[in-house]
Length: 92
Image (cartoon, rainbow, N blue to C red; front, side, top):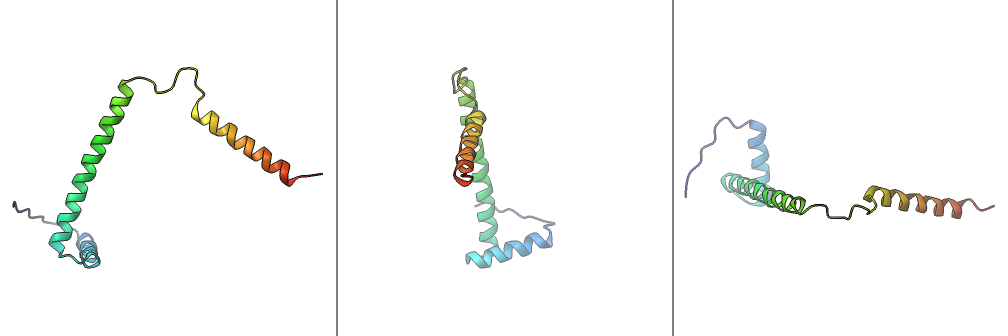
């Protein structure tokens, strides 16, 4: 397995990694490897999501041109709910 040496790591980063290692019951080395592996996996996941979003965009609009805008639907529902609450709380 390859070896990676890291220099000039800020003391606060080292202290934080040591705390995480202790919390997770791992050595400092195992914690660093875990953090790096998680970071790489996050990058891969973001890449897959971005690729899927690009594929969806390439297909064209997901809604027909005459579909209401989502924000308008939300606004109408919110206004209707506010009117309902108002009518229930302000009875003559």
